[in-house]
Figure 1: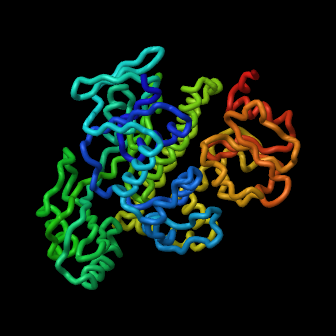
Figure 2: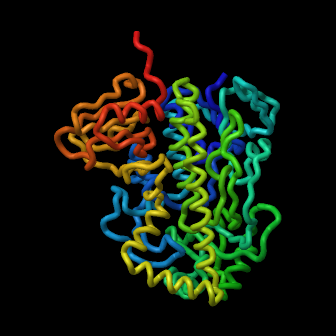
Figure 3: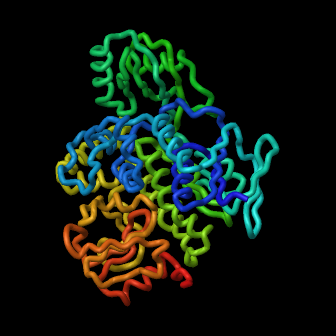
Length: 477
């Protein structure tokens, strides 16, 4: 029996698998497709995603292969320079195509011991009190203690669970592809700039050697997701630009919509949902892939604790309690951005007003932190302002914070010299920060995902928080 089976080998699935392996779990990823996708549905990583990769010692390959871009224009394409004092060591968006992100994450998961089987789609499953039996398209079967559906917006796992996926269907399809253009780059970019004055969902980004990434509104809404033809793409380019720029030799062309839906539940018994299987939304702000990675980061340690047997009651249900409101907020901000890209007079008037408001630094900061997910605060109850927030990568007397989080364990940072979580040494590391730099509070208890579970200076107050999040202490020998 496996500990966890993950349906779907995209970025969310392999990120989750690697997190689970960090805690020694036996993980199997089942991916329907025989080959990794070449379709670039996402093109960047935001600050919080880079932070979580950094906190696991995984970020450097992404930085090596990506390009850093200013955080400007990521809310509905409104161009405003980001404040210079954003509270993150990654105050930029890292341009990196989704296939490369997936390739790097998959390599890191495999290096950690994750088992990945391609060409093995899940078609059914049943669960009982001790596990889940998964049936594959070829008739094969596997059994695991838990299963997680990371199998996309049309999730088979979600449908088989009977979990509702309410929201709005697509109102506008778009064509996305990589094609070669014969027109000179200067001419192409001049036309694109003119069109984007009114149509923010039209674009062409040069990739080198005459190849461009193209996005253009589609003609109507398709009933299926079959790949569009080059002729369809040319026709829509003509419609909006008056030319197809000599488009030829497509690498790939895809269609995507702006449907907005959220799963009614993230868990049914021993089966959970993460990533696009739990939420879909318009692509504005480039938040989709990032949201899935952050789901995985939140879920991984909780599910590992459940399998290991030390999870306190209700810990696994905290996953949905924390992440579903975050997804709701993303759905709302992408709905708002979608409205702001309309060419109608009303939305354009609101867009102009918002552009004026973004000249106020705090408004600009608020929207950037919303898009980059650095402002996410989980509801851990009342208390210190840090409670439920993530800590940025602070310098410590013993290195830096994220350098001490690679093992995926809890972390007690003690500046008083008098606190202890010794009974939980198998789950919590302690940093003595009496001298040197550190957080500007007496002590903090960090969860493995970097969010603050407790702030204080008293052992009597610390222990209930440790029990709440890390269960009972390990038995003494």
